[in-house]
Every structure is written in C-alpha cells, then in structure tokens.
Image (cartoon, rainbow, N blue to C red):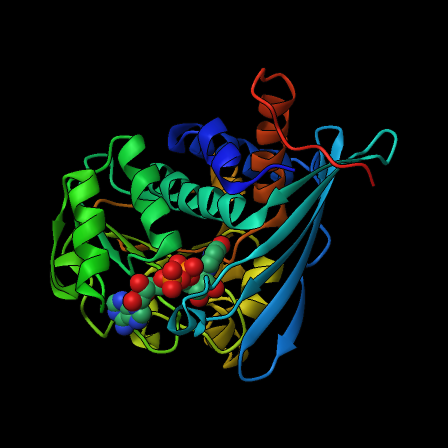
Length: 310
Ligand SMILES: NC(=O)c1ccc[n+]([C@@H]2O[C@H](COP(=O)([O-])OP(=O)(O)OC[C@H]3O[C@@H](n4cnc5c(N)ncnc54)[C@H](O)[C@@H]3O)[C@@H](O)[C@H]2O)c1
C-alpha cells in the first residue's frame, strides 16, 4: 500500500511535472491508452469517478471522488484509491492513496500547460483557490521556476499559509488575475474569472471545473481565449468547455489538445498578446504516470512499505 506520505516523499513536484509531460506525450502518440472516465453521481453530495488507463507495462484504475462540500465536514473533496496492476501478468501490484496521486498530477498539469503555452517571459502566478489541489499547482509551478505569485482564496488562512510556504503573497482575485499565469482551482460553482478581467498575454489554467455543471470562467471571457484542453472527449463533456460546447459556441476545431502541442504537431500560443486557456479535467494517464513512478520508487526503496496479501 502506498500512502500519501510515501507517494509525496517519492515524487517531487518537479518530477511530477516531468512525469505528467511524458504521460501527455505517450497518450498523444497512442502508446498509453485511456477509456473514457465514468461518472457516478452522488446527488446533493458530489460524484465518484472510475478512471482506467494502461501504459508502460502497467494498468491502473482510480476510484476517486469530488465532494465539493466535504471541507465543511472536515473531510477532503478528493479521496479514494488507485489500483496499479501489471499489464503483463494482470497481478495487482499496489493500492495507492489517490489524493496524493491526484494532487501531484493535477498541479503538474498546470505547470506543463504553462511551459507549453505561457509567454516565454511569463513569471508571476495568480492562484485562485488555495485548497489541496491549488496548493500543489502552486508548488509544481514554483518547482519549474514560476513565481513569485499571488494566492487568493475565500479562506484567508489558506491563502496566507500557501503564500508563506512559497514566499509568495496573499492577495485579491483581481491581483491574481493580473499575473502572467493564472490558475483557478475552486469548486466551480460560480465564475471566478469575469468578463474582461484577464490581461493580454496571460495564460489561464482552469483546473476546478472537472465535472458536469461546473465552470470558473464567464463565457464571454472564455471567448477571448485561444482554447486548449487535456483531452477533447473528456473536456467537451465534463469540463470548463462543456457548457460552451453544449450551447454550440465552441466546437472541436476551436480546441487543441495539449499533447499535440507538446508533440510539436499543433501550434500553441500564437502571439505575446494572445490569451491562452487550458481546460484541465484530469486524465487517467496522468494518474498512471505518477503511480508507476511511486510504485517503482517504493519497490526499490529500503524503507518499509506496508504490504498486504490479497
Ligand atoms: N482538473 C483536475 O484534474 C482536478 C483534480 C482534482 C480536483 N479538481 C477539482 O478542483 C476543485 C477543487 O478541489 P480541491 O481538492 O482543491 O478542493 P479544496 O476544497 O481543497 O479547495 C478549494 C478551495 O477553493 C476555495 N474557494 C472556493 N470558492 C472560491 C472563490 N469563489 N474564490 C476563491 N477561492 C474559492 C476554497 O476556500 C478552497 O480553499 C474541485 O472542483 C475538484 O473537483 C480538479
């Protein structure tokens, strides 16, 4: 069993960025496979997701929640387990804490998108939503050289704590929106990026809206951006883009997958003034990349990892 401490101890934010970059590339070239994510609604509470993937000699299945009101009960929004199996023998190799895997790969996706799509001289980071996954986005961005940043959250203590950890500053959403790289990781119940609020040349990574009915960006502001996503099938049905797609405002030809940009097959940012928006819905192949690395690190580690027979 790989618990949160083992996973976070085995993989640094910088390594998570490299692993996530590689996972997007492997998926784009067809080497890593990922059937569609399955949502199971828990009405009034949130939803469960089942996320399978195969690649690199392994297969994984993540069973994970998004229960947005859980913090009111002192419980995490994202929780569950990831099963890692051998794709050669089918053997179950590890059960991983999925909050740690999710946080590393979600934060890393924001950083990979910034490296690919932000202006070359982009430095400052504005983070709106400094909870679990927002904090890891900030850590991953900082690990690959972005910052300083502005941390904005309805909970001042969350913004202060993260800003203190990274040597950044707590500030208002308006200050965060004025940064070169803007990352939103709120529950997606209402827009946190309003009409006309983004500055020319910004890169926006939208992480919080990862399911039906969630959105963090007003439609008119989204319309000002060149659009990118992690995977069209998933993003068009359950992410920031899902609303505009359903209303016919955005179509397949308007959105580029990040993997195609990383592979050099599609254009990224077109100019220094352009606004770029990356819609991250969270892919199973990202989880797989982190889980493999955590498993291989723990397998070769002298430190004891709890083992159970199934
Ligand atoms: N894209 C992905 O891959 C991915 C992965 C994991 C989680 N998520 C989603 O990200 C969201 C956040 O998840 P989490 O685990 O970080 O939750 P969390 O509760 O730990 O953090 C959310 C933070 O947003 C803050 N917040 C809420 N409304 C705000 C507002 N209007 N302005 C500023 N701050 C606000 C909260 O105070 C909290 O600190 C959820 O919707 C979750 O489903 C997406």
